[in-house]
Image (cartoon, rainbow, N blue to C red; front, side, top):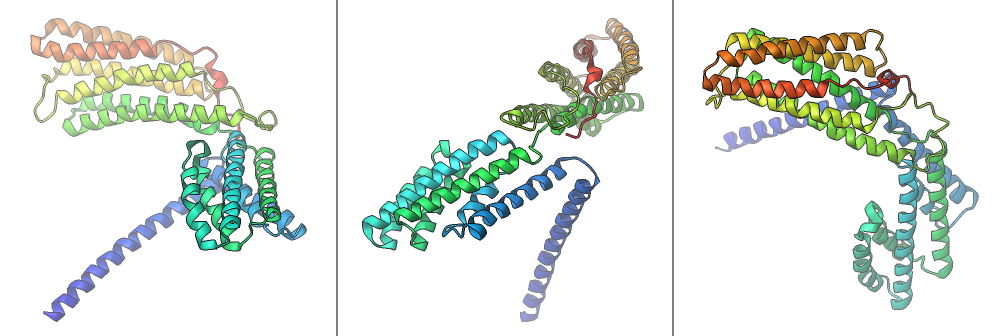
Length: 402
């Protein structure tokens, strides 16, 4: 029995080690891929590297000034403040600087007051920490609220609570804040345009791929799993739209108070927000259309399957609609020499296929006409939303460094 228990523990330990090894291998591979992407060219990975190096440089500069040159007694506060103020936008650095200085001042003053009042470190901690933690949770302080109790602990643990010590701590924090904000604002100030362009490209690219995949599937025959996969892909388009909205907000914020916005090469203007709204209206009928197709081949179908002739016309329609989306991608990337003409021809083909599909309604029984009617309505809505051509969309090509 003892041998069996030992074998069981050995097997369990080996399995746990195997899982840990696989996790470590996966993490190492992911880190390697990110490093290669950062080295290969501009992208989110390189942005992270740039901001990390800026934060490290700001901390080193703050320490060199406060600790090495001035020999300040609380020199740690300068690099500690500087490193966290190299934020993702200049505006956020300034806002965070104000928040952090306010929090550090509150924590320092509370701790110094409690220490001078009680004359005992333990009693001062018991008195000040509950108040500092509560103040740290004040929403106006944001993520920097944690520095209120942390600063109070530094003050009490090191016994630096005289009036001169308090002034030194606040002054060194201000020095670190100025250095951190200056580094972020003057050295490659972040401008978040690339994520907007990535999302803008993904919408027509993935819509075209999905429409072409559905068109091929309708020709070759499709089942429940394939139809559900189409529906999942259509729903993921709404996630891209959400990413695009977030990216737009980041871009607007990154321009606020940014002294480098006119110095950095940001490339051509982005499409207006109306472009995003248009793709929202395109995504909705795509989701509805794929849901209807899935409903005709589910385990317990709620709609009658379509006849082969109707599927062929719908395939032609969706193939042409996918060509429209592919042309939109070409226009967006500045490859619009022939894309606009191809877009118009593809849209004409899609409407012609829609007319043939609609005529199929006259030949169906009531149940089949119900299924087909839903697809006719949803595809018509899709084509109506695809119809507008953005003015001067060729200006939205990618010629910037992000």
